[in-house]
Image (cartoon, rainbow, N blue to C red; front, side, top):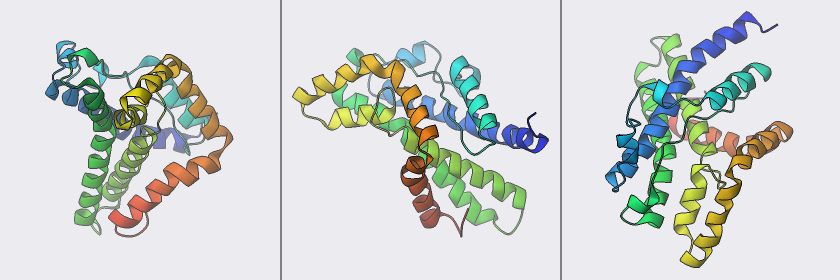
Amino acid sequence: MVKTSLLLEFLLTLPVLVASLVVHELAHGAAAAALGDPTARRLGRLSLNPLVHLDTWGSAMLVLSFLASGGSFFFGWAKPVPITPALLRAPRRDMMLVGAAGPLANYALACTAAAAIWVVRGTSAFVVDALTLAFVLNVVLGTLNLIPLPPLDGSRVVGGLLPLRLYRHWLRLDRYSAYMLPVVLVVMVAEPALFSRTVGAALDWAATVLLPGRY
């Protein structure tokens, strides 16, 4: 049976995580629209309404991974914003910018949360804890999405930096994107030390630089 404290922790974490996922996907759509692709706007994805962004399987995986790990690990995803590369002004460069927009939005949220912590520290422990949670989740989300494997955003960033000849070969990895997320999940579960040395290290560095003391 799931402990009451774990359920409470999940209920407190869920709104912050959903908001972070929504902003992440909204940033992709807004970047694409600014670069000439109106697909996301036409399909109603330039919205803060979480219902238009949440993915059924991604949400289920989020709940299961959080509860099964006792709250120490989560893995899920939102519905990807549809992008039509042919409508972008400079497809290879612009796909890199669209891909980078999501993680950058998460990092911006993390920096905003960190700044707010400096302002409210010493007043309300609950508010500080909520802001710290927002900081942690957004650093983790931004960093995870920069893993250079499709369909994660890091694959678009790397693709935009490659010479055209290599870029064409890189795009062929997209055919395996349906298998990549399960592989990433299995690796993280099987090798938690790898997660600590990469995403965990990025979180520790960001907390040391931005937060007033340890999170």
